[in-house]
Length: 333
Image (cartoon, rainbow, N blue to C red):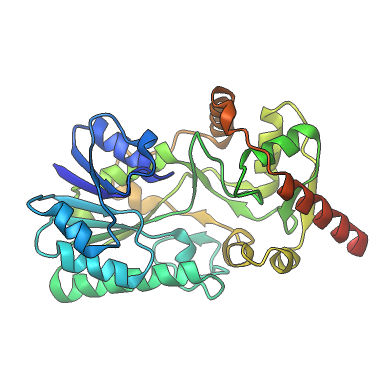
C-alpha cells in the first residue's frame, strides 16, 4: 500500500509514519524538511510546501498513492485544496482533526463520536469543525473517500505537552518540580483527562489506513486511562523523586494573564475529557493503548537525560510564573 503523509515528522505523525514503515507500507512524507531527525528509516521524502499548491502539485506530479494522510490542515480552504488535488486519484484521505471539536462543556460526561461538535471558546477548534464539515459534504456529494481522526492530548518521548508551561523551554516545567518551585494547575486540578502516548495513538491510526470500512467515519483515538490534572503533575513529581508543589489558579484568571492560552484552557483543559474508544476498537480490533502515563513520564525523563542539550530553562517564564503565583495568592489567600 502506497501512503503519503502530509507532515509526518511531528509529535503525532512521527509515530504514525514509523509504524506504517514497520508494517511494510510504502511511505512517502511530504513536508518542508524542517524535522529530518523524525523521518523513519525506509520512508521517502518529498520536500515541498503543501500550502503552496503549485509547488505541491509539481512535486507530486506522476506520483500515485492509495492513502493520503494530512496532519497539518488547519483551515477549510487548505482542506478544499486537498479535495481538488487528490479527488478521484486516491482510495482514502485521512484528516487529522482534534478532540477539541467536541461540545464544551460536554452535555454527557463520556465523549463519543456522536457528541455534538461545538466549541465556542477556541478558534482552532472552530476551524477544525469547518474542515470536517467540508470533508463530510465532499463525501456525501461526490464520494470523496475521507476518514476523520480526532486525537486528544497526545505526547511523545521527546515532549510532554498539556501542562501550563513555557513554549520556549519545555524542560522548565520539570526543573521547577525538581527544585520544589510552584507549578500552576488550572482550576482545582480535578478535571479528568486522558493523555495518550503517540505510539499508542499510532496503533489505532495505522489500523485505519487502507481500512475501507472507515471511509465516511470519524474516530477519536485515546487511552482508556483517566487521570486528574493533579494526579498527572503528582505522577511527574514521583518519577523525579520529589513532591509536587502545586498552585491552583482559576482558569478565568489564567485566561486574563495568559490571553494566548485562554481559548485552550477555557475551551478544553478546564473541562473533563473522558473518551469512549469503543468505535476505534470495533474498526481496529487489535487497538489497545498500553503505555500508562507513569511509564510515559519515565520515557520522557529518560529522553531528556540522553539529550541534555534539550534541557532548556526559560528564565523569563520562571519569572512570569513566580509573579503570577505571588499576585494570585496575595489577592485570594
